Length: 210
Image 1: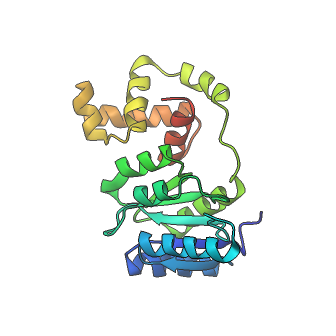
Image 2: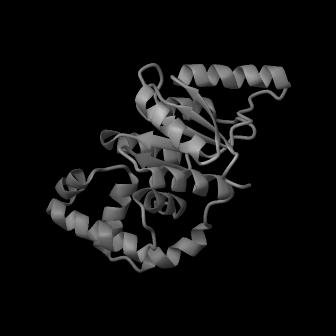
Image 3: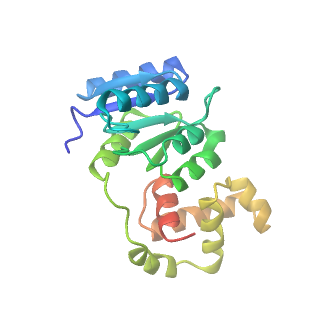
């Protein structure tokens, strides 16, 4: 499916974030539908299901950008409500710096990726493009094991904690090492796992069973 002319649903309570994302996506040729809360989005999903007589269907969205932190219902709760939906498109979580733990939990619950605020135009479009093009299967576990085998015991410890959503300073405390050492380990792990973003690293770690 081409990434342009795709239907993107944006769910976030921050009007500035919504307008910014809308402007970027429309400029890139997408069609955008925005919702100011998880409740309004789920209500629209239910209405579509009744109208189309397809039950719990999220179509016609090709991708959902979902805020992690919202007042009425956070992104993880919305994701859980969508469990079992038919034609569920890829979901990208919009995460603030303090919401990484929730974003990681969301990926374990089925989200395909997350982007951290503040994000650039290129980061947003790359995440959306990748989500739509790779709406298909994640890498097989077996293909990831050789990469995990190349990590040291300490790097595996750090990776497991990262995949659990722990921040660098928390990992440093748990392992009794400096935060700078954690950052070095994290950079080496990303290099050895052949990933460029933290979200890709977490996705690989989860797929490998960590």
